[in-house]
Image (cartoon, rainbow, N blue to C red):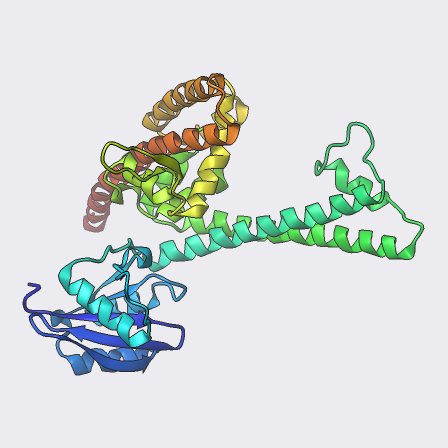
Length: 386
């Protein structure tokens, strides 16, 4: 098939797209620049010939997957490639949009590009919502820090028994009064910002709960079963499911660990073997959630009220995997701690192994959801016939 198609390289920007085409056995030539608009893309595809004879690619970037979806609607096969894995010549010091598009077309024809997984519009929308909540949570933390550090500089200490950011803490801050009007204004402004950030976090959390109800059965199954794991509640489960999109697209747990950037870097040559810290080249949002959950495995295995409540809707297979993970990961933590390892490195290692349990639960949940679909279709057809 590849001998009969033309390969398009697209250097996509916010306003423009540089286009180059590589003929099956000919040279690579530039086709100029077009506006990054749906109508311009449609005219380009119509000009180049039948959509079935075209294969396009462009680098993943801030423009997202809109061009991919537009080309898919036009019947053009398209792949979004990883920009960090595009081959670069050591002596190449000239970089332009035209040259980038030609390089993409040439490398695509030779099979030297690595495609990334492209979510559908629903999965991408849920991912955007989850990341909006994450950004709001980070802003809330900054607002809290500004207020607490202001109180520390002012010599204000909470009463005995009042822990920072528990329910009594804002009440105590609201009752404070300063002699200087400038300090009083600062206190009011910081406290108002903290309250605003609290409401800003609640809004996306409520929206996430509504969005999950409209998600696909497979995604709902994954979110429910992931909550059987220790350290993973509803928001964390939704974040993991949204960032992964489809867990079964990873052939094994090692591939998922690599996608998360939790595997150690390595620089080995000959008899020398040298490994360093984790690569951190994968999904940072997923890695953060997993590492946060890994901290809970420093405590002995247990099923408390909150975890038991979350596991009520989970499958028996998920609960079994989660219980084995508690024993395995706690032993791993204790063994590394006894060896004198740094706590942060221990938690990173535990988080990497936790990804294996996430992969096992996610793939089983998606398989279960796929098995249920034919039954639902069959029941629907029977209902129509009665």
